[in-house]
Length: 116
Length: 109
Image: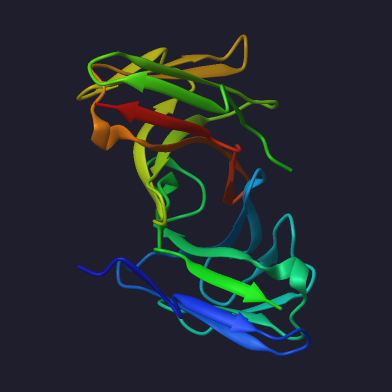
């Protein structure tokens, strides 16, 4: 059981380049998330998708776009990468957004992005 | 904004000792969760405690919740080197979880 799979694992971009981080989950979860993790800052929510067909901004959405392609896949796009977007990016999913066991979030292994 | 704040930021203990880390949060919650992150890996869910629960156990983990003080603690008993990781508390805000900055635990043999 793969859980949450995100690609690529590592990426180096030049300032101004664009790229898309891919994420897929095989747990039939309704909700998906993108977080970034920076030293000393903990995890910060970029965007989330409560259910297929919906997306919403999180705490730090500027410079990013997302697409909930279908129930399994949720991609994160950097249109014009900036050095401030150097970070570790985590995709995650949960059964539902609000109640009970659906609260538990399952994380991918992370994507290390460096913008030079 | 980040809802939970863990304390201490870093903790170093020897194998066999107990490790206690604390989390404070700001607003009312339905539940609070603890996650572990090994170096270079994603976060893994450890335990969830509901707002009407005061204490919960899972193996060597004991979590307490004091809603009047808006705080929670995670106790790891009889620590092992494999417990070396960062530990995060998380509270729900709408559809997403907000995480604190974490406590970095080092368990030395």
